[in-house]
Every structure is written in structure tokens, then in C-alpha cells.
Image 1: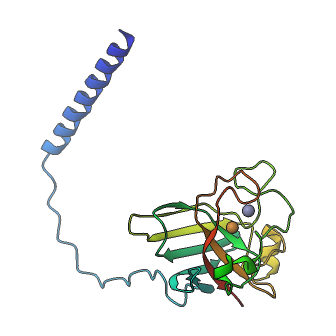
Image 2: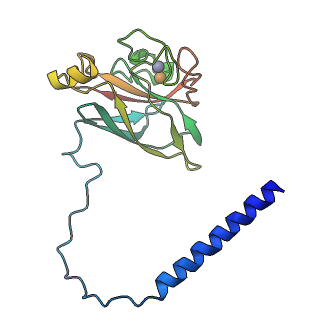
Length: 209
Ligand SMILES: [Cu+2]
Ligand SMILES: [Zn+2]
């Protein structure tokens, strides 16, 4: 009965707001002058050179070019834009690995090293004993295998700077050996050691200074 009464009161509320709407619309609108035509503002650039502080091309294990990642340094972290194809549909783990080396796809992109982890803590954004500064949210590939995403990772910067270090600690990604972005075959559960169960490395982008 309580449930029914609740539903009834919801229905009454809906009816009341409908009639309120109807009344509002019934009032005659004041005539307005047509707005003066304005010069069209330039569309915001999505991947212009002036946006990008660093970038890299994703390669598959067989060496095919399958996409791109771009970075923009912010004071509190780094913004990245990802555009990749040829993935299996569904969620994929993606992380910042330690070395800008994607030369060994046939051997599983091992040369890119492990997750960037200067704090020596555990893996996983949801891990109370984590997380690696490498760890970022999963990306999702549609039925066509394409994925696009924009991700902000706080706590890291591309280039060393006093301002960045004061907020994030001295962890520039662009150190002597650069870094790599690795996409894994499966989603990261953000908890399990050592990489959230994300499985094999299926794409790699090397980013060097
Ligand atoms: Cu990884
Ligand atoms: Zn990790």
C-alpha cells in the first residue's frame, strides 16, 4: 500500500508540474529583435599543435600504426587524449609505463618496463595501498574496435618544473628514457596486483622528449 501511495503522489506531482508548464507556455512571449549576426568564433581545436606538449603513436604487437595519444601539461597533472583503433570491443586497461620503447611488440612490449611507481606503492586506483602514478581509468572500444578518450592524471607532469613539483612531487614523465603508454587486452580492476588483471600488452606508444 505504501508503495502504491508513493507512486500516486509521484503521479500527482508530475501532473502538477505539467500544468504549471502549460500555464507558463500560455503567456505570450515578448517580441524580440533578431540577434545581430556575429563573426563566427573559431571552433576550439581538438588536436592542434599548440594544444599538444607531447605525443606518441600507438603501434600494435605486429608494428602497425593504430592510433595516437596527445598530452597537455597542467599544473595539477597531465591531460591526455587518446584515439586508437584495432582493439577488441570492450574495456581495456591503460597505463603509463616506464620506458619509451615499443620496439619489441612481438615479445609483448616488455621493453617499456613496468608501471611508473616512484612512491613504491601497490597498483590500483581503488587500492587503499596504491596507486602507481602510472594508473589511469580504463578506456572502452566500441564494436568497431575504436576508442577515444580524454583522461586527466593528477600527480604527474610531463616536464620538470618547480610549480609542478610543489603540487605533484618531482615526477616528470619526460625523464631521460621518456615513458610509454600501454593498452592491455583486458580491463584493469584497479585493485589486483600487479596490473589489475589487465593481461597482455596489445598497444604501445613511446613518448620521448
Ligand atoms: Cu600497464
Ligand atoms: Zn599500476
